[in-house]
Amino acid sequence: MFKLRLMMLAGLLLLALPAPAQAKLKVVGTYPYIQDLVQQIAQDKVSVSSLATGDWDPHFVVAKPSLLSRLNRADLLIINGAQLEIGWLPPLLRQANNGRVQPGSAGFLDLSNVADKIQVPDNVSRAMGDVHPQGNPHFVLSPANVPKLADAIAQQLCQLDKPQCKSYQQNLKSFRSRWQQAQARWQQRMAPLKGAKVIEYHRLHDYFLAHYGLELVGTLEPLPGIPPTPGQIQTMVQQAKAANVRWNIRGVFQPMGPSEHLSRHSPARLLTLPHDVGAVPEAKDIFALYETLLKRLGV
Ligand SMILES: [Zn+2]
Image 1 (tube, rainbow, N blue to C red):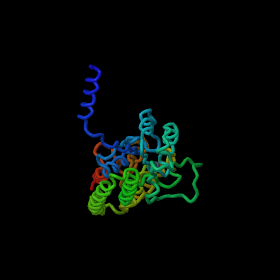
Image 2: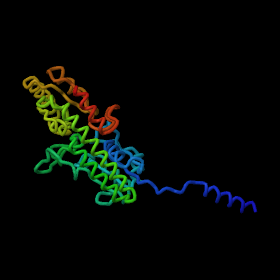
Image 3: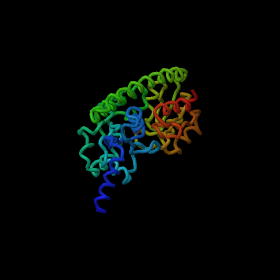
Image 4: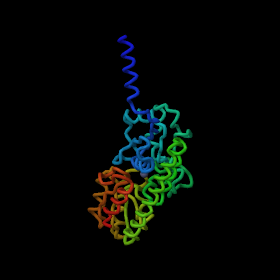
């Protein structure tokens, strides 16, 4: 009798629970900008997280066990690609042993396939230690690439989650229109900086500089990923003086020493710029990332 009552009680409790919602799609992006684009498009319809944080060196993310468990449970993995993750993701992906998100499966999206890329070499070789063997992977810093990335994400979400497709498409449309308006404002604000000369630590903001017509004079790294040598730093000091370079740009994760040296010995002003959502606290989403870039450039 007691047992029966207990069963009835359990039954009533079950009835009182809300109808089980269909489990949300679990999406993992390698970098925070990917997480943000997914959120812009899916809003609360999926659960999404980023493996890396925005202030880490994107080429060398430290693999913590928590990354592995998220990869293990994911339904969709979205990567930047163009070998930006080559130094840290492949072993994690092997260990995660999750067939849904392996390259080539339905739950895997490589954004480099839809982005316009610059600095793509004729022959691929890492013999020189170059960390950009498939072209420059920092393409999210071209505002023209962002809608293409958003399109690809919406399309992938639709394939994996057909019931919500209409909502994804509506959010994509709204995102694209807000992006277009923001881009028009940024274009105007950046116009006075056209032709301004810049030296970078790493080829990190090349897409942004190229899009707005700033002129890259050189980099402190002799090759992407090769630390600055005394000779290369001296060459950049001379070029900064000769060409009256305005800015000396470094990413938040790069060592300060070589950039400080350059600014101490030349007119180029040291400027630390975010490269991803979350690289600095005010770059809260993809719009704020671009806003922060413009503000730090003084426009
Ligand atoms: Zn790089």
